[in-house]
Image 1: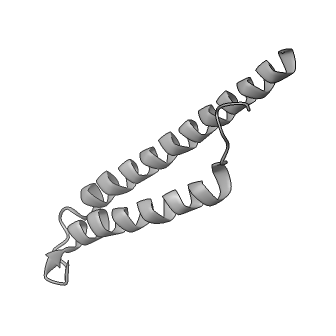
Image 2: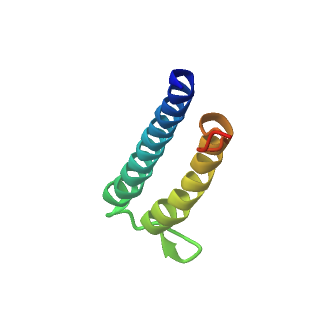
Length: 85
């Protein structure tokens, strides 16, 4: 019974790690998004007839989140059943 409990507890440790990695990624995206707006707010340059701050923050932020989630899934997330059979 104790071995089964340890195995179950290890799954929760893994889920906590995954939640932490997801939180870190969300903070990186948050800083990127608002940092791009703050740093480029006075820039008059445009790209595709949109202000550069918009393109970098929104489109760049989207691309950053897609790549970040792909990295999370490939390297940090583990597929397992929560139930022991």
